[in-house]
Image 1 (cartoon, rainbow, N blue to C red):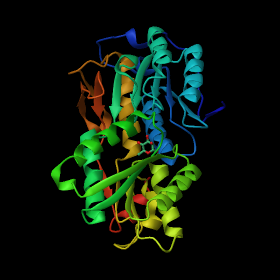
Image 2 (image 1 turned 90 degrees about the vertical axis):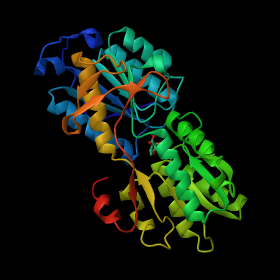
Image 3 (image 1 turned 135 degrees about the vertical axis):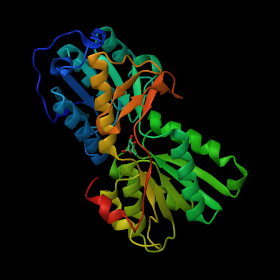
Length: 342
Ligand code: RAM
């Protein structure tokens, strides 16, 4: 599996890793080192925007940033990259995990080597990272999406979920929580008929959308909590003139603007957080781990640029987390102003 290196600036570095705490005021030297960011996969502008935010903050602080994006969103591809990063002796690794468990052993090895390890966007098991940078509260994401399905469908009927893969920690957490919200009485006339997986690939997601349309003639809404899935589903539905199926979910305004033009649109509205801000928060966490201000323990605090003083909290995924952002709703009123940003 090949990896794409967007920026590579390896320099000689101190191997104090995450054990080196100074306690004194930070100097540029405290932040010097190589900070690796491993995305889920290439060809996904959401991942690129997150990496862009990460890189900006690391470089501003005087660190070297290296970004790796596997060709496919698989754990195997990420493990290969992570092993390589351990051999290079980088100071810090941040990964958006394609699998909750499969990366545990390589990330544990990284921590044993003194490398700072954090996750962002999609977590691993708690003992395989120091802290998780969560985009937004899981319950908030799930409830917002179920409410959108409820409103768009008129409160009853069939809906389906188009996800990425069955191993993605973030997708699974949101789907689990959506199922739990669906148990509330308000949603008793809604029926979740299927969950399909398009692997964060446009073509696969389009095929899965076509299958859903064929298999469920009464389907009203497809909810895709993935930026690649949502735009793929919208494209398929827009091309089919004889369907009233609508889509909603988590998407990039730049990919969705053609489908959110008015109330009759394929996608009346959808949500996301700001992926650049998520990357920036993740970089602030990596810098604070490297500097020794934090170790990833609950209650620790650190400065995150414009976002101010941030406190590390207990995570529902186990271990600890930082909540980086909150949901933004995109519709025909505001899509134009957002699409230039991400
Ligand atoms: C996809 C990925 C990512 C998710 C976004 C919303 O590109 O699955 O992990 O957070 O969409």
